[in-house]
Length: 633
Image (cartoon, rainbow, N blue to C red; front, side):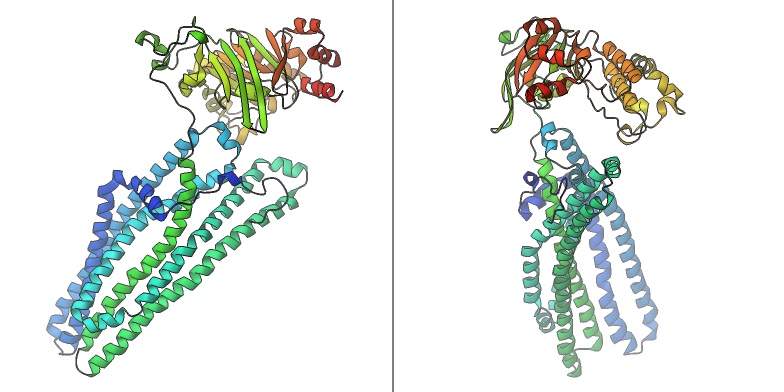
Protein backbone atom coordinates (compact mmCIF):
# COMPACT_ATOMS: atom_id res chain seq x y z
CA UNK A 1 0.00 0.00 0.00
CA UNK A 2 1.44 3.32 -0.99
CA UNK A 3 1.51 5.99 1.66
CA UNK A 4 1.71 9.71 1.13
CA UNK A 5 3.92 11.62 3.56
CA UNK A 6 1.89 12.91 6.46
CA UNK A 7 -0.12 11.74 9.42
CA UNK A 8 -1.47 8.22 9.45
CA UNK A 9 0.26 6.99 6.31
CA UNK A 10 -0.54 3.47 7.41
CA UNK A 11 -2.86 1.82 9.87
CA UNK A 12 -1.24 0.22 12.87
CA UNK A 13 0.63 -2.89 11.70
CA UNK A 14 -0.24 -4.68 14.94
CA UNK A 15 -3.88 -4.67 13.88
CA UNK A 16 -3.43 -6.63 10.66
CA UNK A 17 -6.01 -9.36 10.31
CA UNK A 18 -4.87 -12.79 11.35
CA UNK A 19 -5.28 -15.48 8.64
CA UNK A 20 -8.07 -17.93 9.41
CA UNK A 21 -9.13 -21.10 7.65
CA UNK A 22 -12.35 -21.16 5.63
CA UNK A 23 -13.76 -23.88 7.91
CA UNK A 24 -13.16 -21.74 11.00
CA UNK A 25 -14.81 -18.73 9.40
CA UNK A 26 -17.84 -20.75 8.25
CA UNK A 27 -18.17 -22.43 11.66
CA UNK A 28 -18.02 -19.17 13.62
CA UNK A 29 -20.30 -17.27 11.29
CA UNK A 30 -22.73 -20.20 11.28
CA UNK A 31 -23.34 -19.73 15.01
CA UNK A 32 -25.47 -16.71 14.16
CA UNK A 33 -27.96 -18.93 12.32
CA UNK A 34 -28.75 -20.99 15.41
CA UNK A 35 -31.55 -18.75 16.75
CA UNK A 36 -33.21 -18.65 13.31
CA UNK A 37 -33.02 -22.29 12.24
CA UNK A 38 -36.69 -22.52 11.25
CA UNK A 39 -36.46 -19.34 9.17
CA UNK A 40 -33.30 -20.61 7.45
CA UNK A 41 -34.89 -23.99 6.76
CA UNK A 42 -37.99 -22.21 5.43
CA UNK A 43 -35.85 -20.19 3.05
CA UNK A 44 -34.18 -23.34 1.72
CA UNK A 45 -37.54 -25.18 1.50
CA UNK A 46 -39.18 -22.49 -0.63
CA UNK A 47 -36.08 -22.29 -2.80
CA UNK A 48 -36.37 -26.05 -3.43
CA UNK A 49 -40.10 -25.75 -4.16
CA UNK A 50 -39.32 -23.03 -6.69
CA UNK A 51 -36.66 -25.29 -8.20
CA UNK A 52 -39.11 -28.22 -8.37
CA UNK A 53 -41.59 -26.04 -10.25
CA UNK A 54 -38.82 -25.07 -12.67
CA UNK A 55 -38.01 -28.75 -13.26
CA UNK A 56 -41.42 -29.25 -14.88
CA UNK A 57 -40.61 -26.82 -17.70
CA UNK A 58 -38.22 -29.08 -19.72
CA UNK A 59 -40.58 -32.07 -19.47
CA UNK A 60 -43.63 -30.04 -20.54
CA UNK A 61 -41.65 -28.50 -23.39
CA UNK A 62 -40.67 -31.96 -24.64
CA UNK A 63 -44.34 -32.99 -24.49
CA UNK A 64 -45.41 -29.94 -26.50
CA UNK A 65 -42.83 -30.62 -29.23
CA UNK A 66 -43.27 -34.39 -29.54
CA UNK A 67 -46.93 -34.89 -28.67
CA UNK A 68 -48.60 -31.63 -29.64
CA UNK A 69 -46.64 -30.03 -32.47
CA UNK A 70 -45.23 -33.12 -34.17
CA UNK A 71 -48.49 -35.09 -33.92
CA UNK A 72 -50.61 -31.95 -34.43
CA UNK A 73 -52.62 -32.74 -31.29
CA UNK A 74 -54.22 -29.33 -30.72
CA UNK A 75 -56.73 -30.62 -28.15
CA UNK A 76 -54.09 -31.10 -25.45
CA UNK A 77 -52.25 -27.82 -26.13
CA UNK A 78 -54.46 -25.77 -23.81
CA UNK A 79 -54.06 -28.23 -20.94
CA UNK A 80 -50.27 -28.43 -21.33
CA UNK A 81 -49.89 -24.65 -21.60
CA UNK A 82 -52.09 -24.23 -18.53
CA UNK A 83 -49.80 -26.57 -16.62
CA UNK A 84 -46.76 -24.68 -17.90
CA UNK A 85 -48.14 -21.31 -16.86
CA UNK A 86 -49.12 -22.78 -13.49
CA UNK A 87 -45.59 -24.07 -13.03
CA UNK A 88 -44.17 -20.63 -13.85
CA UNK A 89 -46.62 -19.02 -11.40
CA UNK A 90 -45.68 -21.41 -8.59
CA UNK A 91 -41.96 -20.90 -9.30
CA UNK A 92 -42.25 -17.13 -8.94
CA UNK A 93 -44.63 -17.39 -5.94
CA UNK A 94 -42.20 -19.60 -4.05
CA UNK A 95 -39.34 -17.32 -5.11
CA UNK A 96 -41.17 -14.29 -3.72
CA UNK A 97 -41.76 -16.01 -0.38
CA UNK A 98 -38.11 -17.13 -0.32
CA UNK A 99 -36.90 -13.58 -0.92
CA UNK A 100 -39.15 -12.25 1.83
CA UNK A 101 -37.90 -14.84 4.34
CA UNK A 102 -34.30 -14.39 3.19
CA UNK A 103 -34.42 -10.61 3.66
CA UNK A 104 -35.94 -10.96 7.12
CA UNK A 105 -33.31 -13.52 8.10
CA UNK A 106 -30.53 -11.40 6.61
CA UNK A 107 -31.47 -8.29 8.59
CA UNK A 108 -31.86 -10.23 11.84
CA UNK A 109 -28.41 -11.76 11.47
CA UNK A 110 -26.80 -8.45 10.48
CA UNK A 111 -28.33 -6.85 13.58
CA UNK A 112 -27.05 -9.64 15.83
CA UNK A 113 -23.52 -9.57 14.41
CA UNK A 114 -23.28 -5.79 14.43
CA UNK A 115 -24.57 -5.55 18.00
CA UNK A 116 -22.10 -8.21 19.15
CA UNK A 117 -19.19 -6.42 17.47
CA UNK A 118 -20.24 -3.04 18.91
CA UNK A 119 -20.75 -4.56 22.36
CA UNK A 120 -17.25 -6.03 22.22
CA UNK A 121 -15.83 -2.65 21.17
CA UNK A 122 -17.49 -1.03 24.18
CA UNK A 123 -15.80 -3.52 26.49
CA UNK A 124 -12.27 -3.29 25.17
CA UNK A 125 -9.67 -1.41 27.22
CA UNK A 126 -8.87 2.21 26.44
CA UNK A 127 -5.30 1.30 25.49
CA UNK A 128 -6.61 -0.96 22.71
CA UNK A 129 -8.11 2.03 20.92
CA UNK A 130 -4.90 4.04 21.20
CA UNK A 131 -3.39 1.95 18.41
CA UNK A 132 -6.42 1.77 16.10
CA UNK A 133 -7.82 4.21 13.56
CA UNK A 134 -11.50 5.04 14.09
CA UNK A 135 -12.21 4.93 10.35
CA UNK A 136 -10.79 1.42 10.14
CA UNK A 137 -13.00 0.27 13.01
CA UNK A 138 -16.05 1.84 11.36
CA UNK A 139 -15.27 -0.05 8.15
CA UNK A 140 -15.13 -3.29 10.10
CA UNK A 141 -18.43 -2.68 11.89
CA UNK A 142 -20.34 -1.52 8.81
CA UNK A 143 -18.85 -2.85 5.56
CA UNK A 144 -17.14 -6.00 6.80
CA UNK A 145 -20.16 -7.15 8.79
CA UNK A 146 -22.28 -6.89 5.63
CA UNK A 147 -19.78 -8.95 3.63
CA UNK A 148 -19.53 -11.46 6.47
CA UNK A 149 -23.31 -11.82 6.57
CA UNK A 150 -23.51 -12.60 2.87
CA UNK A 151 -21.42 -15.69 3.47
CA UNK A 152 -23.93 -16.81 6.09
CA UNK A 153 -27.24 -16.07 4.33
CA UNK A 154 -26.55 -16.25 0.61
CA UNK A 155 -23.93 -18.93 1.03
CA UNK A 156 -26.21 -21.15 3.11
CA UNK A 157 -29.31 -20.77 0.96
CA UNK A 158 -27.84 -20.52 -2.54
CA UNK A 159 -25.07 -23.02 -1.84
CA UNK A 160 -27.47 -25.63 -0.49
CA UNK A 161 -29.99 -25.16 -3.29
CA UNK A 162 -27.25 -25.13 -5.95
CA UNK A 163 -25.74 -28.42 -4.73
CA UNK A 164 -29.14 -30.12 -4.46
CA UNK A 165 -30.07 -28.78 -7.88
CA UNK A 166 -26.89 -30.16 -9.44
CA UNK A 167 -27.45 -33.57 -7.87
CA UNK A 168 -31.12 -33.64 -8.89
CA UNK A 169 -30.54 -32.55 -12.49
CA UNK A 170 -27.59 -34.89 -12.90
CA UNK A 171 -29.78 -37.78 -11.77
CA UNK A 172 -32.44 -36.81 -14.32
CA UNK A 173 -29.83 -36.47 -17.09
CA UNK A 174 -28.38 -39.95 -16.50
CA UNK A 175 -31.86 -41.46 -16.28
CA UNK A 176 -32.86 -39.73 -19.51
CA UNK A 177 -29.77 -40.36 -21.64
CA UNK A 178 -26.59 -41.72 -20.01
CA UNK A 179 -24.45 -41.16 -23.14
CA UNK A 180 -25.34 -37.47 -23.44
CA UNK A 181 -24.94 -37.08 -19.67
CA UNK A 182 -21.39 -38.39 -19.96
CA UNK A 183 -20.70 -35.98 -22.82
CA UNK A 184 -22.08 -33.11 -20.73
CA UNK A 185 -19.55 -33.87 -17.98
CA UNK A 186 -16.49 -33.69 -20.25
CA UNK A 187 -15.76 -30.00 -19.31
CA UNK A 188 -15.98 -30.86 -15.58
CA UNK A 189 -12.17 -31.01 -15.05
CA UNK A 190 -11.89 -27.47 -16.42
CA UNK A 191 -14.58 -26.27 -14.00
CA UNK A 192 -12.95 -27.98 -11.02
CA UNK A 193 -9.46 -26.76 -11.89
CA UNK A 194 -10.65 -23.18 -12.35
CA UNK A 195 -12.49 -23.22 -9.04
CA UNK A 196 -9.40 -24.52 -7.23
CA UNK A 197 -7.16 -21.86 -8.80
CA UNK A 198 -9.53 -19.07 -7.87
CA UNK A 199 -10.10 -20.33 -4.33
CA UNK A 200 -6.43 -20.76 -3.55
CA UNK A 201 -5.37 -17.36 -4.91
CA UNK A 202 -8.33 -15.05 -4.18
CA UNK A 203 -7.95 -14.61 -0.43
CA UNK A 204 -4.85 -12.42 -0.57
CA UNK A 205 -6.45 -10.20 -3.19
CA UNK A 206 -9.61 -9.66 -1.14
CA UNK A 207 -7.65 -9.08 2.07
CA UNK A 208 -5.55 -6.38 0.38
CA UNK A 209 -8.71 -4.77 -0.98
CA UNK A 210 -10.35 -4.67 2.48
CA UNK A 211 -7.22 -3.19 4.04
CA UNK A 212 -7.06 -0.51 1.34
CA UNK A 213 -10.72 0.36 1.95
CA UNK A 214 -10.09 0.67 5.70
CA UNK A 215 -7.03 2.86 5.16
CA UNK A 216 -9.00 5.23 2.94
CA UNK A 217 -11.92 5.42 5.38
CA UNK A 218 -9.53 6.04 8.29
CA UNK A 219 -7.94 8.97 6.45
CA UNK A 220 -11.35 10.33 5.46
CA UNK A 221 -12.61 10.29 9.04
CA UNK A 222 -9.39 11.84 10.33
CA UNK A 223 -9.61 14.65 7.79
CA UNK A 224 -13.28 15.35 8.46
CA UNK A 225 -12.54 15.71 12.16
CA UNK A 226 -9.54 17.92 11.43
CA UNK A 227 -11.11 20.04 8.69
CA UNK A 228 -10.49 23.29 10.57
CA UNK A 229 -6.82 22.51 10.96
CA UNK A 230 -6.57 21.60 7.28
CA UNK A 231 -8.12 24.91 6.28
CA UNK A 232 -6.19 27.01 8.80
CA UNK A 233 -2.87 25.65 7.49
CA UNK A 234 -3.98 25.74 3.87
CA UNK A 235 -3.31 22.04 3.40
CA UNK A 236 -6.24 21.22 1.09
CA UNK A 237 -3.99 20.19 -1.82
CA UNK A 238 -1.75 18.20 0.51
CA UNK A 239 -4.76 16.27 1.82
CA UNK A 240 -6.12 15.86 -1.73
CA UNK A 241 -2.86 14.13 -2.59
CA UNK A 242 -2.96 11.94 0.52
CA UNK A 243 -6.55 10.90 -0.12
CA UNK A 244 -5.77 10.35 -3.79
CA UNK A 245 -2.97 7.95 -2.81
CA UNK A 246 -5.31 5.98 -0.55
CA UNK A 247 -8.06 5.97 -3.18
CA UNK A 248 -5.50 4.77 -5.75
CA UNK A 249 -4.54 1.91 -3.41
CA UNK A 250 -8.20 0.91 -3.20
CA UNK A 251 -8.59 1.22 -6.98
CA UNK A 252 -5.58 -1.01 -7.59
CA UNK A 253 -6.78 -3.53 -4.99
CA UNK A 254 -10.25 -3.64 -6.55
CA UNK A 255 -8.83 -3.93 -10.07
CA UNK A 256 -6.66 -6.85 -8.94
CA UNK A 257 -9.79 -8.64 -7.73
CA UNK A 258 -11.67 -7.77 -10.91
CA UNK A 259 -8.85 -8.85 -13.22
CA UNK A 260 -8.83 -12.31 -11.66
CA UNK A 261 -12.62 -12.48 -11.88
CA UNK A 262 -12.51 -11.32 -15.52
CA UNK A 263 -10.42 -14.42 -16.29
CA UNK A 264 -12.19 -16.86 -14.01
CA UNK A 265 -15.83 -16.04 -14.80
CA UNK A 266 -15.61 -16.11 -18.64
CA UNK A 267 -13.45 -19.26 -18.52
CA UNK A 268 -16.08 -21.04 -16.43
CA UNK A 269 -18.86 -19.76 -18.69
CA UNK A 270 -16.96 -21.04 -21.73
CA UNK A 271 -16.57 -24.47 -20.11
CA UNK A 272 -20.33 -24.56 -19.51
CA UNK A 273 -21.04 -23.48 -23.09
CA UNK A 274 -18.61 -26.12 -24.31
CA UNK A 275 -20.65 -28.76 -22.54
CA UNK A 276 -23.87 -27.51 -24.11
CA UNK A 277 -22.20 -27.42 -27.55
CA UNK A 278 -20.91 -30.98 -27.19
CA UNK A 279 -24.36 -32.21 -26.13
CA UNK A 280 -25.99 -30.42 -29.07
CA UNK A 281 -23.40 -32.01 -31.42
CA UNK A 282 -23.79 -35.58 -30.18
CA UNK A 283 -27.51 -35.14 -29.55
CA UNK A 284 -27.99 -33.84 -33.07
CA UNK A 285 -26.37 -36.95 -34.50
CA UNK A 286 -28.72 -39.11 -32.43
CA UNK A 287 -31.76 -37.20 -33.69
CA UNK A 288 -30.55 -37.60 -37.27
CA UNK A 289 -30.08 -41.33 -36.60
CA UNK A 290 -33.66 -41.47 -35.21
CA UNK A 291 -32.31 -42.63 -31.83
CA UNK A 292 -34.06 -39.73 -30.02
CA UNK A 293 -36.72 -37.18 -30.85
CA UNK A 294 -36.27 -33.44 -31.23
CA UNK A 295 -38.38 -32.94 -28.12
CA UNK A 296 -36.15 -35.24 -26.09
CA UNK A 297 -33.05 -33.33 -27.24
CA UNK A 298 -34.65 -30.00 -26.36
CA UNK A 299 -35.69 -31.43 -22.99
CA UNK A 300 -32.13 -32.62 -22.34
CA UNK A 301 -30.70 -29.22 -23.30
CA UNK A 302 -33.12 -27.43 -20.98
CA UNK A 303 -32.18 -29.74 -18.09
CA UNK A 304 -28.53 -29.18 -18.98
CA UNK A 305 -29.13 -25.45 -18.59
CA UNK A 306 -30.52 -26.15 -15.12
CA UNK A 307 -27.32 -28.14 -14.44
CA UNK A 308 -24.82 -25.47 -15.48
CA UNK A 309 -26.77 -22.56 -13.99
CA UNK A 310 -26.16 -23.64 -10.35
CA UNK A 311 -22.54 -24.43 -11.23
CA UNK A 312 -22.19 -20.82 -12.37
CA UNK A 313 -23.91 -19.75 -9.15
CA UNK A 314 -21.36 -21.73 -7.13
CA UNK A 315 -18.58 -19.86 -8.92
CA UNK A 316 -20.21 -16.59 -7.85
CA UNK A 317 -20.59 -17.93 -4.32
CA UNK A 318 -16.90 -18.83 -4.36
CA UNK A 319 -16.07 -15.21 -5.14
CA UNK A 320 -18.38 -14.07 -2.35
CA UNK A 321 -16.87 -16.63 0.03
CA UNK A 322 -13.37 -15.28 -0.48
CA UNK A 323 -14.55 -11.69 0.05
CA UNK A 324 -16.55 -12.71 3.13
CA UNK A 325 -13.63 -14.68 4.52
CA UNK A 326 -11.36 -11.62 4.37
CA UNK A 327 -14.09 -9.47 5.96
CA UNK A 328 -14.79 -12.07 8.65
CA UNK A 329 -11.15 -12.16 9.70
CA UNK A 330 -11.27 -8.40 10.30
CA UNK A 331 -14.48 -8.71 12.32
CA UNK A 332 -13.13 -11.61 14.37
CA UNK A 333 -10.03 -9.56 15.19
CA UNK A 334 -12.39 -7.35 17.20
CA UNK A 335 -14.44 -10.22 18.61
CA UNK A 336 -11.29 -12.04 19.79
CA UNK A 337 -9.66 -9.00 21.41
CA UNK A 338 -9.33 -9.30 25.20
CA UNK A 339 -12.00 -7.41 27.10
CA UNK A 340 -11.35 -5.17 30.06
CA UNK A 341 -11.02 -6.94 33.38
CA UNK A 342 -14.66 -7.27 34.50
CA UNK A 343 -13.75 -9.49 37.42
CA UNK A 344 -16.32 -9.22 40.17
CA UNK A 345 -14.73 -11.94 42.28
CA UNK A 346 -16.90 -14.42 44.12
CA UNK A 347 -14.80 -13.85 47.20
CA UNK A 348 -14.47 -10.06 47.06
CA UNK A 349 -17.71 -8.14 47.31
CA UNK A 350 -17.40 -5.07 49.48
CA UNK A 351 -15.50 -3.74 52.40
CA UNK A 352 -16.41 -1.47 55.22
CA UNK A 353 -14.89 1.97 54.94
CA UNK A 354 -12.78 1.38 58.04
CA UNK A 355 -10.82 -1.49 56.51
CA UNK A 356 -7.29 -0.86 55.37
CA UNK A 357 -5.62 -2.53 52.36
CA UNK A 358 -3.72 -4.89 54.63
CA UNK A 359 -6.97 -5.97 56.26
CA UNK A 360 -8.67 -7.14 53.07
CA UNK A 361 -10.12 -10.60 53.78
CA UNK A 362 -10.13 -13.40 51.24
CA UNK A 363 -13.81 -14.08 51.86
CA UNK A 364 -16.62 -11.78 52.89
CA UNK A 365 -19.92 -12.33 54.62
CA UNK A 366 -23.22 -11.59 52.84
CA UNK A 367 -23.69 -8.49 55.00
CA UNK A 368 -20.59 -7.00 53.40
CA UNK A 369 -21.84 -7.35 49.82
CA UNK A 370 -23.90 -4.14 49.66
CA UNK A 371 -21.67 -2.46 47.09
CA UNK A 372 -21.86 -5.03 44.34
CA UNK A 373 -25.52 -5.81 44.91
CA UNK A 374 -26.30 -2.09 44.72
CA UNK A 375 -23.92 -0.50 42.21
CA UNK A 376 -25.23 2.98 42.96
CA UNK A 377 -23.98 2.78 46.57
CA UNK A 378 -21.78 5.83 47.15
CA UNK A 379 -18.24 5.33 48.40
CA UNK A 380 -16.50 7.76 50.75
CA UNK A 381 -13.77 8.44 48.22
CA UNK A 382 -10.58 7.52 50.09
CA UNK A 383 -7.85 6.77 47.51
CA UNK A 384 -4.53 5.10 48.10
CA UNK A 385 -1.74 4.18 45.68
CA UNK A 386 0.81 1.69 46.98
CA UNK A 387 4.13 1.50 45.12
CA UNK A 388 2.38 1.74 41.75
CA UNK A 389 4.31 1.37 38.52
CA UNK A 390 3.17 1.44 34.91
CA UNK A 391 4.89 0.85 31.61
CA UNK A 392 3.65 0.55 28.04
CA UNK A 393 6.67 -1.57 27.18
CA UNK A 394 10.05 -2.50 28.62
CA UNK A 395 11.51 0.55 26.90
CA UNK A 396 8.74 2.93 27.93
CA UNK A 397 8.36 3.13 31.69
CA UNK A 398 5.90 5.87 32.66
CA UNK A 399 5.41 5.54 36.46
CA UNK A 400 7.82 4.22 39.10
CA UNK A 401 7.01 3.51 42.76
CA UNK A 402 4.07 5.93 43.12
CA UNK A 403 2.57 5.99 46.61
CA UNK A 404 -0.04 8.50 47.73
CA UNK A 405 -2.99 8.81 50.06
CA UNK A 406 -5.98 11.07 49.39
CA UNK A 407 -8.51 11.30 52.21
CA UNK A 408 -12.21 11.71 51.43
CA UNK A 409 -12.97 15.24 50.24
CA UNK A 410 -9.31 16.21 49.79
CA UNK A 411 -7.96 17.96 46.73
CA UNK A 412 -4.75 16.52 45.31
CA UNK A 413 -2.94 18.56 42.68
CA UNK A 414 -0.55 16.95 40.20
CA UNK A 415 2.10 19.18 38.65
CA UNK A 416 5.13 18.50 36.52
CA UNK A 417 6.50 18.82 33.02
CA UNK A 418 4.95 17.21 29.95
CA UNK A 419 5.52 13.47 29.99
CA UNK A 420 6.00 13.27 33.76
CA UNK A 421 3.13 10.74 34.05
CA UNK A 422 0.35 12.92 35.48
CA UNK A 423 -2.38 11.76 33.08
CA UNK A 424 -1.30 8.14 33.31
CA UNK A 425 -1.42 8.29 37.10
CA UNK A 426 -5.06 9.44 37.19
CA UNK A 427 -6.05 7.08 34.33
CA UNK A 428 -5.16 4.14 36.56
CA UNK A 429 -7.88 5.13 39.01
CA UNK A 430 -10.91 4.36 36.74
CA UNK A 431 -8.90 1.41 35.31
CA UNK A 432 -8.49 2.91 31.86
CA UNK A 433 -5.10 1.24 32.20
CA UNK A 434 -3.98 -1.45 34.64
CA UNK A 435 -0.96 -0.85 36.86
CA UNK A 436 1.92 -3.16 35.96
CA UNK A 437 3.05 -3.21 39.59
CA UNK A 438 1.64 -2.11 42.94
CA UNK A 439 -2.01 -1.63 43.86
CA UNK A 440 -4.66 1.10 43.78
CA UNK A 441 -7.33 1.19 46.51
CA UNK A 442 -10.60 3.04 46.96
CA UNK A 443 -12.06 2.91 50.47
CA UNK A 444 -9.66 0.07 51.18
CA UNK A 445 -10.79 -2.02 48.21
CA UNK A 446 -8.37 -3.08 45.51
CA UNK A 447 -9.75 -1.58 42.28
CA UNK A 448 -8.77 -4.76 40.42
CA UNK A 449 -11.32 -6.70 42.48
CA UNK A 450 -14.20 -4.31 41.79
CA UNK A 451 -16.65 -4.63 38.90
CA UNK A 452 -15.75 -1.93 36.37
CA UNK A 453 -19.30 -0.61 36.40
CA UNK A 454 -19.19 -0.18 40.16
CA UNK A 455 -15.74 1.37 40.09
CA UNK A 456 -16.51 3.90 37.38
CA UNK A 457 -19.81 4.92 38.94
CA UNK A 458 -17.71 6.36 41.77
CA UNK A 459 -15.57 8.55 39.51
CA UNK A 460 -16.30 11.62 37.38
CA UNK A 461 -13.86 12.87 34.77
CA UNK A 462 -13.72 16.41 33.37
CA UNK A 463 -11.16 16.52 30.59
CA UNK A 464 -9.12 19.48 29.46
CA UNK A 465 -10.75 19.17 26.04
CA UNK A 466 -14.39 18.35 26.86
CA UNK A 467 -16.15 15.93 24.54
CA UNK A 468 -19.81 16.47 23.71
CA UNK A 469 -21.87 14.00 21.71
CA UNK A 470 -23.64 15.14 18.55
CA UNK A 471 -27.00 15.60 20.20
CA UNK A 472 -28.80 18.18 22.33
CA UNK A 473 -27.48 19.97 25.41
CA UNK A 474 -30.08 18.10 27.45
CA UNK A 475 -28.84 14.72 26.22
CA UNK A 476 -25.23 15.63 26.94
CA UNK A 477 -25.90 16.73 30.52
CA UNK A 478 -28.20 13.78 31.20
CA UNK A 479 -25.37 11.49 30.15
CA UNK A 480 -24.17 11.93 33.72
CA UNK A 481 -27.38 10.35 35.04
CA UNK A 482 -29.89 9.17 32.46
CA UNK A 483 -32.86 9.03 34.84
CA UNK A 484 -32.33 12.49 36.36
CA UNK A 485 -35.36 14.72 36.77
CA UNK A 486 -35.81 18.06 35.03
CA UNK A 487 -35.21 19.81 38.35
CA UNK A 488 -31.91 17.96 38.83
CA UNK A 489 -30.91 18.80 35.28
CA UNK A 490 -31.50 22.50 35.80
CA UNK A 491 -29.83 22.47 39.21
CA UNK A 492 -26.68 20.92 37.74
CA UNK A 493 -26.67 23.42 34.88
CA UNK A 494 -27.04 26.35 37.28
CA UNK A 495 -24.26 25.05 39.51
CA UNK A 496 -22.05 24.74 36.43
CA UNK A 497 -22.85 28.33 35.36
CA UNK A 498 -24.30 27.21 32.05
CA UNK A 499 -28.05 27.58 32.64
CA UNK A 500 -28.07 31.22 31.61
CA UNK A 501 -26.42 30.80 28.22
CA UNK A 502 -28.53 27.69 27.53
CA UNK A 503 -31.81 29.50 28.12
CA UNK A 504 -30.69 32.26 25.74
CA UNK A 505 -30.43 29.74 22.90
CA UNK A 506 -33.43 29.45 20.56
CA UNK A 507 -34.08 25.81 21.47
CA UNK A 508 -32.76 26.07 25.01
CA UNK A 509 -31.81 22.69 26.45
CA UNK A 510 -32.95 21.05 23.21
CA UNK A 511 -30.41 22.98 21.11
CA UNK A 512 -28.11 20.69 19.18
CA UNK A 513 -24.40 21.07 19.87
CA UNK A 514 -23.04 19.64 16.61
CA UNK A 515 -20.25 17.11 16.21
CA UNK A 516 -17.94 17.26 19.24
CA UNK A 517 -19.89 20.32 20.41
CA UNK A 518 -18.71 22.51 17.52
CA UNK A 519 -21.68 24.91 17.87
CA UNK A 520 -20.60 25.92 21.38
CA UNK A 521 -17.58 27.89 22.50
CA UNK A 522 -14.75 26.24 24.43
CA UNK A 523 -15.99 27.75 27.69
CA UNK A 524 -19.59 26.70 27.04
CA UNK A 525 -18.56 23.13 26.26
CA UNK A 526 -16.49 23.00 29.42
CA UNK A 527 -19.39 24.18 31.58
CA UNK A 528 -21.74 21.65 29.99
CA UNK A 529 -19.22 18.90 30.78
CA UNK A 530 -19.01 20.17 34.37
CA UNK A 531 -22.82 20.05 34.62
CA UNK A 532 -22.68 16.47 33.40
CA UNK A 533 -20.15 15.60 36.11
CA UNK A 534 -22.23 17.37 38.76
CA UNK A 535 -25.30 15.40 37.75
CA UNK A 536 -23.38 12.14 38.09
CA UNK A 537 -22.55 13.16 41.67
CA UNK A 538 -19.63 10.75 42.06
CA UNK A 539 -17.48 10.98 45.22
CA UNK A 540 -14.19 11.04 43.25
CA UNK A 541 -13.33 13.61 40.62
CA UNK A 542 -10.53 13.64 38.05
CA UNK A 543 -10.05 17.13 36.65
CA UNK A 544 -7.71 18.14 33.87
CA UNK A 545 -8.09 21.86 34.44
CA UNK A 546 -9.06 23.69 31.27
CA UNK A 547 -9.19 27.43 31.75
CA UNK A 548 -6.10 28.40 29.80
CA UNK A 549 -7.86 28.84 26.46
CA UNK A 550 -10.72 31.09 27.56
CA UNK A 551 -11.18 34.75 28.38
CA UNK A 552 -11.02 36.09 31.91
CA UNK A 553 -14.79 36.30 32.43
CA UNK A 554 -15.35 32.76 31.14
CA UNK A 555 -12.46 31.51 33.25
CA UNK A 556 -14.12 32.99 36.32
CA UNK A 557 -17.40 31.23 35.51
CA UNK A 558 -15.63 27.92 34.95
CA UNK A 559 -13.57 28.32 38.13
CA UNK A 560 -16.73 28.94 40.17
CA UNK A 561 -18.33 25.86 38.62
CA UNK A 562 -15.23 23.78 39.36
CA UNK A 563 -15.19 24.87 42.99
CA UNK A 564 -18.81 23.73 43.35
CA UNK A 565 -17.94 20.48 41.59
CA UNK A 566 -14.97 19.75 43.84
CA UNK A 567 -16.77 20.61 47.06
CA UNK A 568 -16.99 17.50 49.24
CA UNK A 569 -15.34 15.30 46.62
CA UNK A 570 -11.95 13.64 46.51
CA UNK A 571 -10.39 15.53 43.63
CA UNK A 572 -7.33 14.88 41.53
CA UNK A 573 -6.42 17.99 39.56
CA UNK A 574 -3.83 18.07 36.82
CA UNK A 575 -2.91 21.69 37.34
CA UNK A 576 -1.91 24.18 34.68
CA UNK A 577 -2.12 27.36 36.72
CA UNK A 578 -0.51 28.05 40.07
CA UNK A 579 -3.58 29.94 41.26
CA UNK A 580 -5.65 26.77 40.97
CA UNK A 581 -3.60 24.69 43.38
CA UNK A 582 -2.81 27.11 46.19
CA UNK A 583 -5.74 25.68 48.16
CA UNK A 584 -4.92 22.02 47.43
CA UNK A 585 -4.67 19.73 50.44
CA UNK A 586 -1.59 18.17 48.90
CA UNK A 587 0.51 18.91 45.86
CA UNK A 588 2.45 16.14 44.15
CA UNK A 589 5.36 17.21 41.95
CA UNK A 590 6.15 14.56 39.32
CA UNK A 591 9.25 14.25 37.22
CA UNK A 592 10.10 11.32 34.95
CA UNK A 593 7.37 9.15 36.45
CA UNK A 594 8.28 9.70 40.11
CA UNK A 595 6.95 11.92 42.88
CA UNK A 596 9.90 14.16 43.72
CA UNK A 597 8.08 16.50 46.13
CA UNK A 598 4.81 16.53 48.04
CA UNK A 599 3.07 18.82 50.48
CA UNK A 600 0.84 21.88 50.63
CA UNK A 601 1.65 25.07 48.75
CA UNK A 602 3.18 26.71 51.81
CA UNK A 603 5.10 23.58 52.82
CA UNK A 604 6.63 23.22 49.39
CA UNK A 605 7.60 26.88 49.31
CA UNK A 606 9.33 26.45 52.66
CA UNK A 607 11.45 23.54 51.41
CA UNK A 608 12.83 25.74 48.63
CA UNK A 609 12.84 22.82 46.19
CA UNK A 610 11.64 22.41 42.61
CA UNK A 611 8.14 23.68 43.34
CA UNK A 612 9.48 26.76 45.10
CA UNK A 613 11.63 27.57 42.08
CA UNK A 614 8.56 27.12 39.93
CA UNK A 615 6.57 29.53 42.09
CA UNK A 616 9.25 32.17 41.73
CA UNK A 617 9.26 31.81 37.95
CA UNK A 618 5.55 32.22 37.44
CA UNK A 619 2.43 33.54 39.03
CA UNK A 620 0.04 33.45 36.13
CA UNK A 621 1.93 31.58 33.45
CA UNK A 622 1.33 27.92 32.91
CA UNK A 623 2.93 25.50 35.34
CA UNK A 624 4.06 23.07 32.64
CA UNK A 625 5.76 25.90 30.74
CA UNK A 626 7.59 26.84 33.92
CA UNK A 627 8.73 23.27 34.49
CA UNK A 628 10.07 23.19 30.96
CA UNK A 629 12.03 26.37 31.70
CA UNK A 630 13.43 24.77 34.86
CA UNK A 631 14.34 21.64 32.94
CA UNK A 632 16.17 23.75 30.37
CA UNK A 633 18.17 25.40 33.15
